[in-house]
Length: 69
Image 1 (cartoon, rainbow, N blue to C red):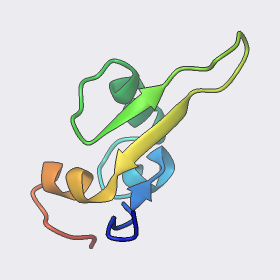
Image 2: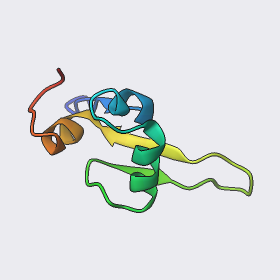
Image 3: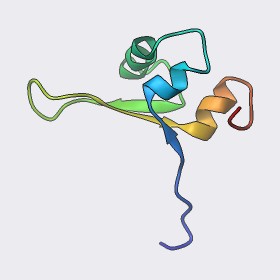
Image 4: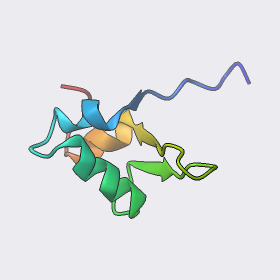
């Protein structure tokens, strides 16, 4: 397990700073599975919050960039 490198992630707010869209647009796309750079995890109980996972390297590849700007 020590050989596994920690994956860098972004929040929807952080990701939105790199594109001309807001964080809610990114959240909606993740919930609808429109993007391959992350996923949305639904709440376990009614009234709970969604969780969003955006893989930094996949997000920048989606933008056509290999690394964080």
